[in-house]
Each structure stands twice: as structure tokens, then as C-alpha cells.
View 1 (cartoon, rainbow, N blue to C red):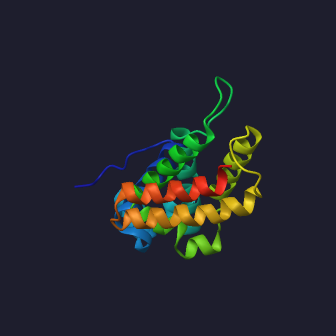
View 2: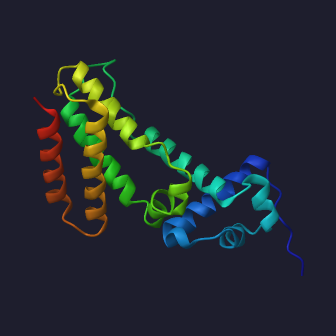
View 3: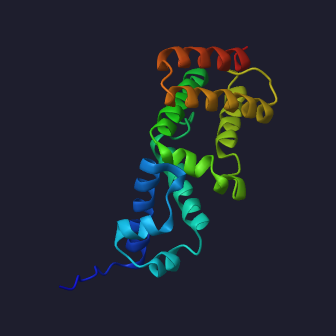
Length: 189
């Protein structure tokens, strides 16, 4: 009995490979390899390399999808329709970030804490976003006159630690209360 291979358009095949890699990485973390992905998709190893010249190229595409998904689901607030309550917006975005990251399971470690993350740093996207929020809050008069980028970097360290704590089973409400205290104490006049 021969198995007929499914013909897909190139972009659909690429997405299929990405989605399989995300599922496997979410479930198993950084130990996942190309052979497992191609087996999951049901394609030859050579097909993988048509779309992703290296494993790192695949991981970079997965990381880009994660950032896109987060930005789409949790867009930065805008003062277009009404004034933004920047402290509340920051609380909301920080909680969204923690919950989103915890929900990644093993994918978080594979993308942000593996050898890949050392070889291809993400450019501190979270720090860049946090810096933008601090600056917008400062322009609106809601946040103190702090140096936004280093403050964002230090606050992100606290946010990252809160994420690790919640992922490890720490009480979510207590963790967020402490994190809000740190954020407000650092930013609110």
C-alpha cells in the first residue's frame, strides 16, 4: 500500500512545518529536533530545508510568529479615542505578557533560553515595548521622569522573574500584587 502525499502550496507547507514545530516545542521544549518535526508533518527532511535552511531559521520564524501573535492579541494602547490610564494599561500588558509566556510551555525555553537565544538574540523586543510604554506614560504625565530604557530593562527583569515564579506555581495574585507595587513605585510620581 502506498501513501499518497498531500500537495500543498509552498506557504501552506511552510505554515504546516511551523505549526508542527510550535506544538512539539510547546510540549517538549528545546530538546525537539528536525527529525521529530518532519515526522509530525509527514514530509522528508529535505522538504524542511526547502523552507528553513537551518534549525535556527525555523526557531527565528517561530519567535516572529509569537511576537506577532502577542502584538495582535495585546496591542499597545493609543490615546486616539480617549486618554489612556497608563498605570492601568501597564498592569494589563504585564499580566498579559506573563500569562502569554506561561502559556508557551516548553516553547518559551526553546525560543528564549536555549543556545538559539544566545546565537540569535531577539533584540530585547520586550524591553523595547516596555520603553515605549514608559515614554508614552511620561508624555501623558502619568509616569515619573525616569530614564526610560534602563528603567524598562530593570523592570523587565522583575517581570521575567514574576513569569518564572508563576510558571513554577507561585500564587498568581500575590505575585502580581508585588509586581504592581514595584512597577508603580518605580514609575508613578
